[in-house]
Amino acid sequence: MSSDMKCPFCQQELEVMRGLSPSVYGCPKCKHIATIGVWEELIRTRKALDVAVDALKQIDWCATDYGQAQDALDKITALEQKE
Image (cartoon, rainbow, N blue to C red; front, top):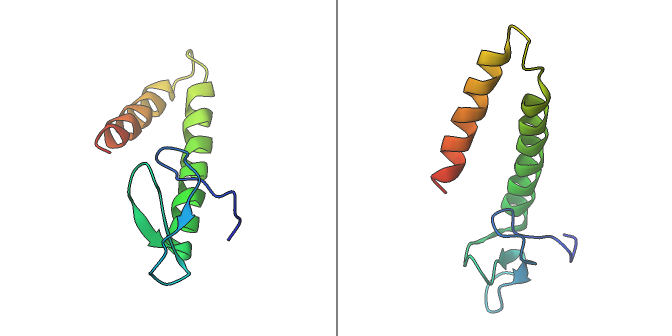
Protein backbone atom coordinates (compact mmCIF):
# COMPACT_ATOMS: atom_id res chain seq x y z
CA MET A 1 0.00 0.00 0.00
CA SER A 2 1.27 3.44 -0.85
CA SER A 3 2.07 5.48 2.23
CA ASP A 4 0.21 8.44 0.72
CA MET A 5 -3.16 6.72 0.43
CA LYS A 6 -5.93 9.02 1.60
CA CYS A 7 -9.37 8.35 2.99
CA PRO A 8 -11.93 8.52 0.14
CA PHE A 9 -14.38 10.21 2.53
CA CYS A 10 -12.31 13.06 4.03
CA GLN A 11 -8.92 12.92 2.25
CA GLN A 12 -6.91 12.40 5.47
CA GLU A 13 -3.83 10.19 5.16
CA LEU A 14 -4.57 6.64 6.31
CA GLU A 15 -2.59 5.22 9.22
CA VAL A 16 -1.62 1.71 10.28
CA MET A 17 -3.86 0.65 13.15
CA ARG A 18 -1.30 -0.28 15.81
CA GLY A 19 -2.15 -3.38 17.78
CA LEU A 20 -4.10 -4.84 14.88
CA SER A 21 -2.89 -6.64 11.78
CA PRO A 22 -0.34 -4.63 9.75
CA SER A 23 -2.78 -4.84 6.84
CA VAL A 24 -5.42 -2.84 8.74
CA TYR A 25 -5.48 0.91 8.21
CA GLY A 26 -7.70 3.59 9.64
CA CYS A 27 -8.63 7.19 9.10
CA PRO A 28 -7.74 9.41 12.07
CA LYS A 29 -10.55 11.85 11.22
CA CYS A 30 -13.48 9.61 10.13
CA LYS A 31 -12.47 6.70 12.36
CA HIS A 32 -13.21 4.20 9.56
CA ILE A 33 -11.06 1.06 9.75
CA ALA A 34 -10.50 -1.47 6.96
CA THR A 35 -7.96 -3.75 5.38
CA ILE A 36 -5.67 -2.51 2.63
CA GLY A 37 -7.77 -4.30 -0.01
CA VAL A 38 -10.97 -2.63 1.10
CA TRP A 39 -9.32 0.83 1.16
CA GLU A 40 -7.87 0.26 -2.32
CA GLU A 41 -11.27 -0.76 -3.68
CA LEU A 42 -13.04 2.22 -2.05
CA ILE A 43 -10.45 4.62 -3.46
CA ARG A 44 -10.66 3.04 -6.94
CA THR A 45 -14.46 3.18 -6.86
CA ARG A 46 -14.46 6.83 -5.71
CA LYS A 47 -12.13 7.73 -8.61
CA ALA A 48 -14.38 5.89 -11.09
CA LEU A 49 -17.46 7.64 -9.71
CA ASP A 50 -15.73 11.02 -10.02
CA VAL A 51 -14.97 10.29 -13.70
CA ALA A 52 -18.61 9.32 -14.33
CA VAL A 53 -19.97 12.41 -12.56
CA ASP A 54 -17.59 14.68 -14.49
CA ALA A 55 -18.69 13.09 -17.78
CA LEU A 56 -22.37 13.50 -16.92
CA LYS A 57 -21.78 17.15 -16.09
CA GLN A 58 -20.16 17.68 -19.52
CA ILE A 59 -23.23 16.54 -21.48
CA ASP A 60 -24.57 19.27 -23.73
CA TRP A 61 -27.62 20.97 -22.26
CA CYS A 62 -29.30 20.80 -25.68
CA ALA A 63 -28.74 17.08 -26.12
CA THR A 64 -31.84 14.89 -26.16
CA ASP A 65 -30.30 12.56 -23.56
CA TYR A 66 -29.65 15.39 -21.11
CA GLY A 67 -32.69 14.46 -19.02
CA GLN A 68 -31.33 10.95 -18.47
CA ALA A 69 -27.91 12.32 -17.59
CA GLN A 70 -29.41 14.78 -15.12
CA ASP A 71 -31.48 12.00 -13.54
CA ALA A 72 -28.33 9.93 -13.09
CA LEU A 73 -26.50 12.89 -11.55
CA ASP A 74 -29.42 13.54 -9.20
CA LYS A 75 -29.43 9.89 -8.06
CA ILE A 76 -25.66 9.91 -7.48
CA THR A 77 -25.90 13.15 -5.53
CA ALA A 78 -28.71 11.77 -3.37
CA LEU A 79 -26.72 8.63 -2.60
CA GLU A 80 -23.61 10.63 -1.71
CA GLN A 81 -25.59 12.86 0.66
CA LYS A 82 -26.58 9.79 2.68
CA GLU A 83 -22.90 9.32 3.67
